[in-house]
Length: 289
Image (tube, rainbow, N blue to C red; front, side, top):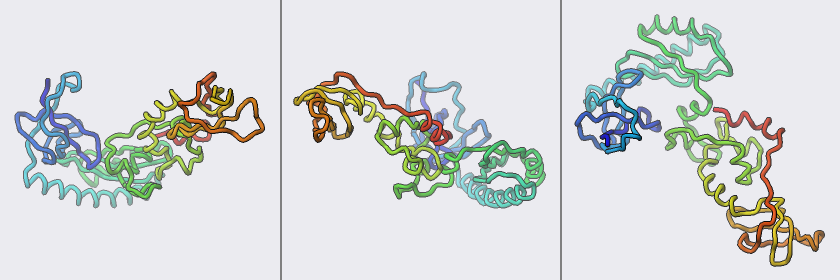
Protein backbone atom coordinates (compact mmCIF):
# COMPACT_ATOMS: atom_id res chain seq x y z
CA UNK A 1 0.00 0.00 0.00
CA UNK A 2 1.12 3.55 -0.77
CA UNK A 3 0.05 6.75 0.97
CA UNK A 4 -0.93 9.41 -1.57
CA UNK A 5 -2.76 12.70 -1.95
CA UNK A 6 -4.74 13.74 -5.03
CA UNK A 7 -4.05 17.22 -6.41
CA UNK A 8 -5.89 19.27 -9.03
CA UNK A 9 -4.30 22.20 -10.84
CA UNK A 10 -7.53 23.45 -12.39
CA UNK A 11 -10.93 23.88 -10.80
CA UNK A 12 -12.30 21.00 -12.86
CA UNK A 13 -9.34 18.97 -13.99
CA UNK A 14 -7.61 15.63 -13.74
CA UNK A 15 -6.50 14.51 -10.27
CA UNK A 16 -2.79 13.64 -9.98
CA UNK A 17 -1.26 11.56 -7.20
CA UNK A 18 1.66 12.80 -5.09
CA UNK A 19 3.60 11.55 -2.07
CA UNK A 20 2.40 13.67 0.91
CA UNK A 21 5.94 13.52 2.31
CA UNK A 22 4.69 12.79 5.83
CA UNK A 23 2.41 15.85 5.95
CA UNK A 24 -1.26 15.38 6.87
CA UNK A 25 -3.47 17.34 4.49
CA UNK A 26 -7.18 17.89 4.17
CA UNK A 27 -9.53 18.49 1.24
CA UNK A 28 -9.13 21.98 -0.23
CA UNK A 29 -5.62 22.66 1.09
CA UNK A 30 -3.34 24.55 -1.30
CA UNK A 31 -0.03 22.78 -1.91
CA UNK A 32 3.21 23.29 -3.80
CA UNK A 33 4.39 20.29 -5.83
CA UNK A 34 6.82 19.52 -8.61
CA UNK A 35 5.31 18.38 -11.92
CA UNK A 36 6.58 17.64 -15.41
CA UNK A 37 5.89 21.31 -16.20
CA UNK A 38 7.87 22.56 -13.22
CA UNK A 39 6.87 23.71 -9.74
CA UNK A 40 3.12 24.24 -9.51
CA UNK A 41 0.51 25.29 -6.97
CA UNK A 42 -2.51 22.99 -6.77
CA UNK A 43 -5.44 22.17 -4.53
CA UNK A 44 -5.90 18.92 -2.62
CA UNK A 45 -8.83 17.03 -4.16
CA UNK A 46 -8.19 13.83 -2.20
CA UNK A 47 -6.77 13.87 1.33
CA UNK A 48 -4.13 11.38 2.55
CA UNK A 49 -5.21 7.90 1.57
CA UNK A 50 -3.70 4.43 1.27
CA UNK A 51 -3.92 2.98 -2.25
CA UNK A 52 -2.81 -0.39 -3.52
CA UNK A 53 0.50 -0.28 -5.39
CA UNK A 54 -1.08 -1.34 -8.69
CA UNK A 55 -3.15 1.88 -8.74
CA UNK A 56 -0.11 4.13 -8.34
CA UNK A 57 2.53 4.90 -10.96
CA UNK A 58 5.88 4.88 -9.21
CA UNK A 59 7.95 6.77 -8.36
CA UNK A 60 5.60 9.44 -7.01
CA UNK A 61 6.84 13.00 -6.84
CA UNK A 62 6.89 14.31 -3.28
CA UNK A 63 4.96 17.24 -1.91
CA UNK A 64 7.27 20.25 -1.52
CA UNK A 65 5.20 22.11 1.07
CA UNK A 66 1.78 23.31 2.02
CA UNK A 67 1.19 26.64 0.29
CA UNK A 68 1.95 29.74 2.34
CA UNK A 69 0.29 33.17 2.13
CA UNK A 70 3.24 34.33 0.03
CA UNK A 71 2.72 31.42 -2.36
CA UNK A 72 -0.97 32.28 -2.80
CA UNK A 73 -0.07 35.93 -3.36
CA UNK A 74 2.32 34.83 -6.09
CA UNK A 75 -0.47 32.77 -7.72
CA UNK A 76 -2.66 35.90 -7.81
CA UNK A 77 0.17 37.89 -9.36
CA UNK A 78 0.61 35.20 -11.99
CA UNK A 79 -3.09 35.46 -12.90
CA UNK A 80 -2.62 39.19 -13.53
CA UNK A 81 0.44 38.46 -15.66
CA UNK A 82 -1.60 35.94 -17.66
CA UNK A 83 -4.14 38.61 -18.60
CA UNK A 84 -1.37 40.89 -19.86
CA UNK A 85 0.31 38.01 -21.73
CA UNK A 86 -3.00 37.12 -23.39
CA UNK A 87 -3.32 40.62 -24.88
CA UNK A 88 0.30 40.68 -26.06
CA UNK A 89 0.01 37.25 -27.69
CA UNK A 90 -3.20 38.19 -29.53
CA UNK A 91 -1.43 41.26 -30.89
CA UNK A 92 1.53 39.18 -32.07
CA UNK A 93 -0.80 36.64 -33.72
CA UNK A 94 -2.41 39.45 -35.75
CA UNK A 95 1.01 40.85 -36.70
CA UNK A 96 2.12 37.47 -38.04
CA UNK A 97 -1.23 36.89 -39.77
CA UNK A 98 -1.65 33.45 -38.23
CA UNK A 99 -4.96 31.57 -38.54
CA UNK A 100 -5.26 30.61 -34.89
CA UNK A 101 -7.46 31.54 -31.94
CA UNK A 102 -5.86 32.12 -28.56
CA UNK A 103 -7.91 30.45 -25.81
CA UNK A 104 -5.96 30.66 -22.57
CA UNK A 105 -2.59 31.54 -21.03
CA UNK A 106 -0.97 29.89 -18.01
CA UNK A 107 2.13 30.82 -16.06
CA UNK A 108 3.83 28.04 -14.13
CA UNK A 109 4.11 28.85 -10.42
CA UNK A 110 7.87 29.47 -10.64
CA UNK A 111 7.47 31.60 -13.82
CA UNK A 112 9.83 29.18 -15.56
CA UNK A 113 7.42 28.71 -18.47
CA UNK A 114 4.37 30.35 -20.04
CA UNK A 115 1.86 28.13 -21.87
CA UNK A 116 -0.35 29.56 -24.60
CA UNK A 117 -3.34 27.39 -25.57
CA UNK A 118 -4.90 27.92 -28.99
CA UNK A 119 -7.27 26.34 -31.50
CA UNK A 120 -6.80 26.19 -35.27
CA UNK A 121 -8.35 24.33 -38.19
CA UNK A 122 -5.03 22.79 -39.19
CA UNK A 123 -1.31 22.92 -38.51
CA UNK A 124 0.14 26.35 -37.79
CA UNK A 125 3.75 27.41 -38.23
CA UNK A 126 4.21 29.47 -35.08
CA UNK A 127 8.02 29.39 -34.84
CA UNK A 128 8.41 33.13 -35.40
CA UNK A 129 5.62 33.82 -32.92
CA UNK A 130 7.45 31.79 -30.26
CA UNK A 131 10.63 33.79 -30.87
CA UNK A 132 8.74 37.06 -30.47
CA UNK A 133 7.06 35.93 -27.25
CA UNK A 134 10.33 34.65 -25.81
CA UNK A 135 11.96 38.01 -26.54
CA UNK A 136 9.13 39.88 -24.77
CA UNK A 137 8.76 37.65 -21.70
CA UNK A 138 12.37 36.42 -21.31
CA UNK A 139 11.31 32.90 -20.32
CA UNK A 140 10.43 29.55 -21.89
CA UNK A 141 7.39 29.66 -24.18
CA UNK A 142 5.17 26.73 -25.10
CA UNK A 143 2.31 26.97 -27.60
CA UNK A 144 -0.14 24.09 -27.31
CA UNK A 145 -2.88 23.40 -29.86
CA UNK A 146 -6.07 22.06 -28.26
CA UNK A 147 -9.37 20.72 -29.59
CA UNK A 148 -12.78 22.37 -29.43
CA UNK A 149 -13.83 20.21 -26.46
CA UNK A 150 -10.83 21.42 -24.45
CA UNK A 151 -11.66 24.98 -25.46
CA UNK A 152 -15.22 24.59 -24.14
CA UNK A 153 -13.85 23.12 -20.89
CA UNK A 154 -11.53 26.09 -20.39
CA UNK A 155 -13.97 28.86 -21.31
CA UNK A 156 -17.22 27.40 -19.96
CA UNK A 157 -20.73 28.42 -20.99
CA UNK A 158 -24.29 27.12 -21.10
CA UNK A 159 -25.30 23.91 -22.84
CA UNK A 160 -28.48 23.34 -24.85
CA UNK A 161 -30.06 22.05 -21.62
CA UNK A 162 -29.65 25.51 -20.10
CA UNK A 163 -27.13 24.35 -17.49
CA UNK A 164 -23.38 25.15 -17.31
CA UNK A 165 -21.17 22.83 -19.37
CA UNK A 166 -20.57 19.47 -17.64
CA UNK A 167 -16.91 19.57 -18.72
CA UNK A 168 -16.45 22.94 -17.01
CA UNK A 169 -18.28 22.09 -13.79
CA UNK A 170 -17.58 18.49 -12.76
CA UNK A 171 -16.09 16.30 -15.51
CA UNK A 172 -12.42 15.81 -14.68
CA UNK A 173 -11.68 14.00 -17.95
CA UNK A 174 -13.52 13.56 -21.23
CA UNK A 175 -15.11 10.17 -21.82
CA UNK A 176 -15.32 8.68 -25.33
CA UNK A 177 -18.74 9.29 -26.93
CA UNK A 178 -19.88 7.67 -30.18
CA UNK A 179 -22.64 7.97 -32.75
CA UNK A 180 -23.54 4.35 -31.90
CA UNK A 181 -24.55 5.52 -28.40
CA UNK A 182 -26.97 8.08 -29.83
CA UNK A 183 -28.45 5.43 -32.13
CA UNK A 184 -28.85 2.90 -29.32
CA UNK A 185 -30.56 5.51 -27.16
CA UNK A 186 -33.11 6.13 -29.90
CA UNK A 187 -32.06 9.74 -30.49
CA UNK A 188 -32.55 11.60 -33.73
CA UNK A 189 -29.26 11.62 -35.65
CA UNK A 190 -29.66 15.33 -36.35
CA UNK A 191 -26.28 16.98 -35.57
CA UNK A 192 -28.07 19.94 -33.97
CA UNK A 193 -29.83 17.65 -31.46
CA UNK A 194 -26.94 15.38 -30.47
CA UNK A 195 -24.00 17.81 -30.43
CA UNK A 196 -23.01 20.26 -27.72
CA UNK A 197 -22.00 23.89 -28.04
CA UNK A 198 -18.46 22.74 -28.90
CA UNK A 199 -19.82 21.05 -32.04
CA UNK A 200 -18.99 17.53 -30.85
CA UNK A 201 -21.25 14.79 -29.49
CA UNK A 202 -22.77 15.70 -26.13
CA UNK A 203 -20.85 14.30 -23.15
CA UNK A 204 -24.15 13.41 -21.44
CA UNK A 205 -24.74 10.61 -24.00
CA UNK A 206 -22.28 8.63 -21.89
CA UNK A 207 -24.16 9.00 -18.60
CA UNK A 208 -26.99 6.54 -19.31
CA UNK A 209 -25.23 4.33 -21.85
CA UNK A 210 -24.66 1.48 -19.40
CA UNK A 211 -28.41 1.34 -18.69
CA UNK A 212 -29.28 1.31 -22.40
CA UNK A 213 -26.67 -1.39 -23.05
CA UNK A 214 -28.22 -3.58 -20.35
CA UNK A 215 -31.77 -3.00 -21.61
CA UNK A 216 -30.78 -3.78 -25.19
CA UNK A 217 -29.66 -7.25 -24.08
CA UNK A 218 -33.16 -8.15 -22.88
CA UNK A 219 -35.35 -6.06 -25.21
CA UNK A 220 -36.23 -7.01 -28.80
CA UNK A 221 -35.02 -4.45 -31.33
CA UNK A 222 -37.03 -2.93 -34.15
CA UNK A 223 -37.43 -5.56 -36.86
CA UNK A 224 -37.33 -8.49 -34.43
CA UNK A 225 -39.74 -11.40 -34.83
CA UNK A 226 -41.43 -12.18 -31.51
CA UNK A 227 -44.01 -14.56 -30.13
CA UNK A 228 -46.79 -12.70 -28.31
CA UNK A 229 -49.94 -13.86 -26.44
CA UNK A 230 -51.80 -13.13 -29.71
CA UNK A 231 -49.39 -14.87 -32.06
CA UNK A 232 -46.18 -14.06 -33.89
CA UNK A 233 -45.37 -10.60 -35.15
CA UNK A 234 -42.73 -8.02 -36.06
CA UNK A 235 -41.58 -5.33 -33.64
CA UNK A 236 -42.13 -1.93 -35.28
CA UNK A 237 -41.41 0.34 -32.32
CA UNK A 238 -39.60 0.05 -28.97
CA UNK A 239 -39.52 2.15 -25.82
CA UNK A 240 -36.45 0.84 -24.04
CA UNK A 241 -37.02 2.65 -20.76
CA UNK A 242 -40.63 1.55 -20.27
CA UNK A 243 -40.17 -1.87 -21.90
CA UNK A 244 -43.22 -1.32 -24.14
CA UNK A 245 -43.13 -2.87 -27.63
CA UNK A 246 -45.36 -2.12 -30.58
CA UNK A 247 -45.91 -5.27 -32.63
CA UNK A 248 -47.51 -5.85 -36.04
CA UNK A 249 -49.07 -9.32 -35.92
CA UNK A 250 -48.47 -11.70 -38.83
CA UNK A 251 -52.08 -12.92 -38.83
CA UNK A 252 -53.41 -9.37 -39.27
CA UNK A 253 -50.71 -7.24 -40.96
CA UNK A 254 -53.18 -4.55 -42.04
CA UNK A 255 -54.79 -4.22 -38.61
CA UNK A 256 -53.71 -1.76 -35.93
CA UNK A 257 -50.51 -2.77 -34.16
CA UNK A 258 -50.67 -4.15 -30.62
CA UNK A 259 -48.58 -3.09 -27.63
CA UNK A 260 -46.97 -5.52 -25.19
CA UNK A 261 -44.56 -5.38 -22.29
CA UNK A 262 -41.18 -6.98 -22.95
CA UNK A 263 -42.00 -9.61 -20.29
CA UNK A 264 -44.99 -10.79 -22.36
CA UNK A 265 -43.07 -11.72 -25.51
CA UNK A 266 -40.44 -14.25 -26.53
CA UNK A 267 -37.77 -13.37 -29.09
CA UNK A 268 -37.71 -15.71 -32.08
CA UNK A 269 -35.27 -13.67 -34.17
CA UNK A 270 -33.85 -10.39 -32.93
CA UNK A 271 -33.37 -7.28 -35.04
CA UNK A 272 -30.26 -5.15 -35.39
CA UNK A 273 -29.42 -1.51 -34.82
CA UNK A 274 -27.74 -0.34 -38.00
CA UNK A 275 -25.98 2.84 -39.07
CA UNK A 276 -25.77 3.23 -42.82
CA UNK A 277 -22.51 4.40 -44.40
CA UNK A 278 -23.91 7.81 -45.34
CA UNK A 279 -24.91 8.50 -41.71
CA UNK A 280 -21.48 7.47 -40.44
CA UNK A 281 -19.70 9.67 -42.98
CA UNK A 282 -21.98 12.63 -42.27
CA UNK A 283 -21.66 12.45 -38.51
CA UNK A 284 -18.08 11.17 -38.09
CA UNK A 285 -16.73 14.67 -37.41
CA UNK A 286 -18.92 14.88 -34.29
CA UNK A 287 -16.86 12.12 -32.64
CA UNK A 288 -13.52 13.92 -32.98
CA UNK A 289 -11.86 15.68 -30.06
